[in-house]
Length: 208
Image 1 (tube, rainbow, N blue to C red):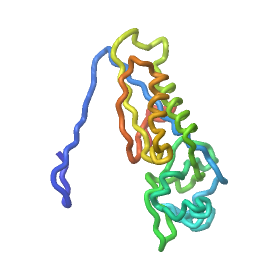
Image 2 (cartoon, one colour):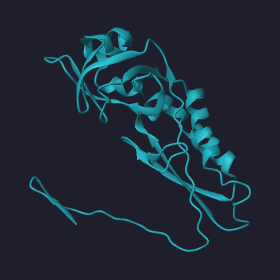
Image 3 (tube, rainbow, N blue to C red):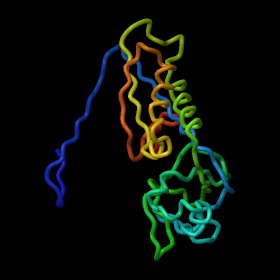
Image 4 (tube, rainbow, N blue to C red):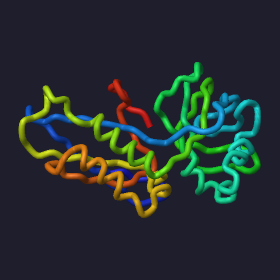
């Protein structure tokens, strides 16, 4: 049971599975498409971005959003940043906009930023997001040599609320794409979240 000064008791539930017959796999893929130039992070603190290429981050962001800028910070979910390393290599991490500070001309992002790295804006189409869900399902498929011959299969799908905003009434399509890959013998369950933590491709470490 967790408790805080400003709220009553809160509860945390954890479920564990064990046994020799269990096999757990994972897959993570976005489907967001980059646009615009890669820009260097020239000033940030934690998850607050102050400058890109020496310019106020909020001003740069608004310039690229055009008419969508009027809806900030809500419309920021539609245009996240892709994080790149100091040598501009993709790392597969996305940072969504959580808030804006007009006075400081800064952006509050959902996760820490590499102060020596680069950022690039991203956007999405319905088809690209569906393809991303399919790619995540393919990555989660057990390898043929180690796949169990029989047994129940459960897929827990955790998708970003930003994807839901983009897809609107077509959200079922990404679930259907996963179901087609994993097969009718797999039970699908899941939810939309406000940030996801997953192991990265080829690594055992997790990242936001």
